Length: 320
Ligand code: MTE
Image (cartoon, rainbow, N blue to C red; front, side):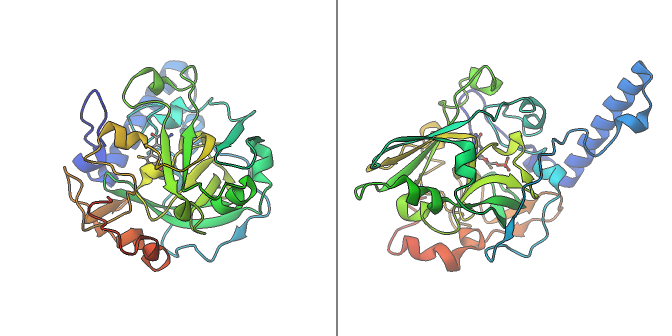
């Protein structure tokens, strides 16, 4: 993706992912071996799969969802160590470490704009609104990599129904927390902070749109958007805003952060569409993390049967 100060060439585009990960593992191993030698601590105690992974608490009572894909789930270590989270860093391997101490409690979400009654909801109240479901979704980043993730959450519509939006509300806007004391990336003007994303109301009410607070049966790791994020599986990953603190209902289309940053490159809709290239690269194929060969990208990321009708009559080249 592009950001204000310097062009971003995704590492995944330069080095095949598996080589890249192997190299990273090698470097991590070398660093750990160095530390072990220097401190006298045995290597076996230091090298463990949890070295860079922050496991959450198990979530009870998770239901399986009929919306899940049966495709192979991407390993946890890849999904939690290769993140786009510019509030922490523009380097994909860094949020795992930099977000380690990010505070996700107490956490309030403001629900305002065109609603019958403005509210401030506590995260733990939100989490009890509906039973947690596991949704195994494909997740396609606009940069050309993809993952398959067993998210935990429930349909965003559950919260929207309770928010009681007014009839004239046409869009929903999501805003990420603004806190540069905790998020070092916000000290740099790489994006217009806070991170804002939006959906049209019918998109947000679609049963596939997920209000997400967990993955792999556990609380969401900080680097993946704890304590609350959106997941919109038929759209490019940047629509899925992390660490949200505000949900606002509007009549006008929200102005999303990536659209401000590069309007020619990132639109409002951002539906996964292999026939519409990004101005700087093709969107026809993607590389699943951990795989060598690219695979074809599917229209609406493979969710066309469910969501294509939302866009009947729209020119998806113009509304990219
Ligand atoms: N949300 C916030 N607040 N900040 C970000 O930088 N990056 C987006 C999206 N949500 C981003 C964000 C992009 S570009 C992608 S691809 C996904 O998060 C990555 O989600 P993941 O790290 O859980 O795979």
